[in-house]
Image 1 (cartoon, helix red, strand yellow):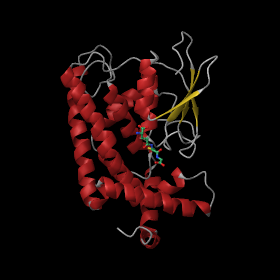
Image 2 (image 1 turned 60 degrees about the vertical axis):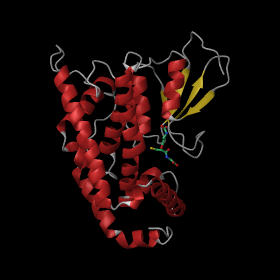
Image 3 (image 1 turned 180 degrees about the horizontal axis):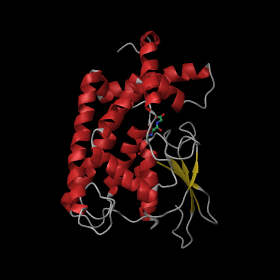
Image 4 (image 1 turned 60 degrees about the horizontal axis):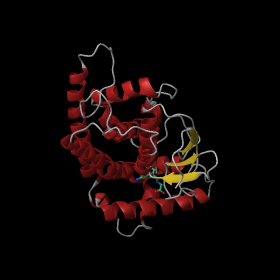
Length: 293
Ligand SMILES: N[C@@H](CCC(=O)N[C@@H](CS)C(=O)NCC(=O)O)C(=O)O
């Protein structure tokens, strides 16, 4: 393990896509938020799950003069390591035990529950949009085959984890319930910040005047819903709660103003929904590869 050094290392963040701005992965945006909250600079590269240390994005390469570059995977492990090396502050250091428990419960709700509902919407209900984005770097006809394998693997995971045992409308209800509860927290948090002199200060999900770990995760999940045409139902739900969009917009304005703000073209969303309806027959033939569906 490299020793801590007084010179800052250079950090390359592999985000899965080379496009500038937000990417579709909530875990990538979570990590970017965490780095930006602390003003820690990083270089963005595409990378790929195929070359990632744990087969998933994000991952980072940390380079220090005189040391071998180090690759670290998993957004939480990366954050933990950067905190340990004093490159990031421990956002939860000043929280009491009850607030820490709430912070952890919120992160688990988003990363271990909502994530699977979002995956179902993207991979099952908007398969073609998701496939062509996630596997866009793979040329046809290979993408068709790799897409089916990715679909099968995702659905096997979702079935084992439990989500795919429910119907689409049931999953919609679960998803909506989570966002409704998040909205209640944010409405309350915004009220508590209303007395500050700053006209549009960021407000934070636990209601404090500084972010906690859960804020980076929540921001990642809101952006993941807002920018992806493969998640139109999530997007509609999030947009129905103005406090959620306001929360994300204030964070965007303060920390991500170099990225294009979300706001998908409605025509693009309608196209994706129509494309899904038109491709129903093909989707049914895909399912013959997944016998349990
Ligand atoms: N626990 C991981 C989750 C990362 C994750 O699930 N990344 C997804 C994109 S949102 C991924 O790379 N999936 C590709 C795959 O599973 O092949 C983290 O926090 O970094």
